[in-house]
Image 1 (tube, rainbow, N blue to C red):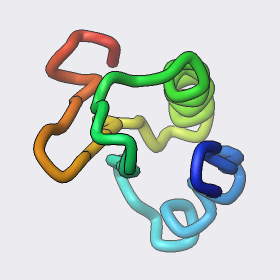
Image 2 (spheres, rainbow, N blue to C red):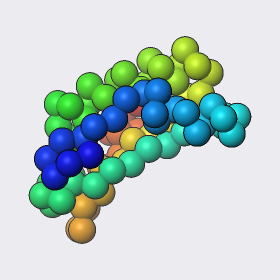
Image 3 (cartoon, helix red, strand yellow):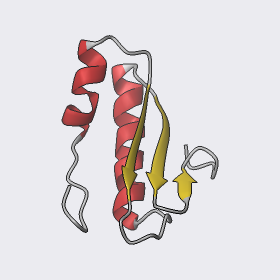
Length: 80
């Protein structure tokens, strides 16, 4: 990604998981701003990854956002 944009596509995110025959994945990224709340882009990407994982048979278990002092779990907030 860049300082304020996450550049990710499901094909890159799932490539290693498929190659290694993973049963599931968990992803994470940081928010240098210190605000752990997901952005609209974070939410959209998570929804896209959930759909992709379901299609591929490699479910997304969680998406974590971390900062220097907090974290956000999509699973804990019932968004996965």
